[in-house]
Image 1 (cartoon, rainbow, N blue to C red):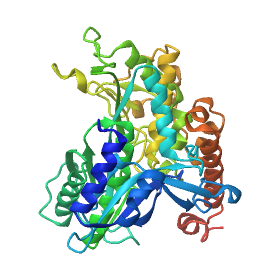
Image 2 (image 1 turned 45 degrees about the vertical axis):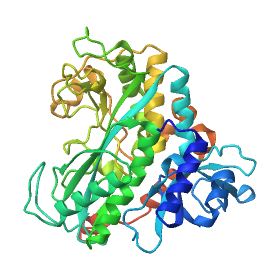
Image 3 (image 1 turned 180 degrees about the vertical axis):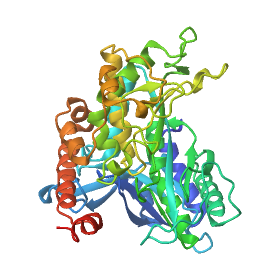
Length: 447
């Protein structure tokens, strides 16, 4: 977030567009599923758009509006103005801005995921908190978008021979940085042809915009190299899927509200209540953090994805991990929520995580004892005895839990909540009526 006023930001946009000979400006926003939408305006319309927004028809956008209320206004956020590095600069550059969606009278549209996140951040701000997040998004490179042929056979942190993947990662990092997105790490992940680029911790609204930009940049660079990139949670049977571990903390001004020097885990009472809230409501928010039928092929025991409601410091089989504290790094004290996948809608996912954590703080919830043993190796009886619950095992189960969740309804607002549930039920019905290759191979010869 910048310290500029909106007027100063508008002046900066107009000046920069002129200096770089920008011809087209793309206005970006997302539907409720987190699919990036865009339309372009010309530089001649830019000043008017910054003042009054641009009208468009929202009737065909998922969860946006009924036919009788289809007129929408996209109001550009001048703080998000960036040149698109993959577009040629010599013959009129192209830039982008994220837009907030308004009703024709200028009132924020409650079906806009960016507005939903802003509302939740406002609730946190009313309690004195700023919400910071640092998601780690994994993804795969494949030869093309029609199959899952990997580009390499590397593993976690492997330095594979200088191949397309290393060059693509490098190019992706450079393009992200050109668009003002700080990058901390980039490395090969556990599975063949799986990679991860970690963006630098920042406030949740900026980060949700950054996640949308990151996913597009990764795909654009892959296309440039003649291959395909995907954030599909589980594209290949038998190997790890792709997750989006979300590091998160609350700050009060400059002070990390999660840090307490006297606690053995260096966690404040607020941090522990936040963990307790996130653990308690994790099953209810799963449909939002893992919103596709395919998400539940990743959330199975044995492939690094956490499925049990537990927390700990060192243990990577837990749903919530507390990275070890290093002296002098109080601001880095945080918790890591490990179940979300990179194909979620980041605006809604950050909203429900924050809402669950704040509910824990508001009610003073106490977390259960941390579990440092491997939860996967425990018997079902032992997990039951220790009160370790599990996440939903299918999209249907997840929808049913979310549908009855007061916390999720409040976090998303009625419009998005109802449209989201309805959309997911349709997806489940379409999926369950399919006849899969697995069924044909298994049953056709014997039945």
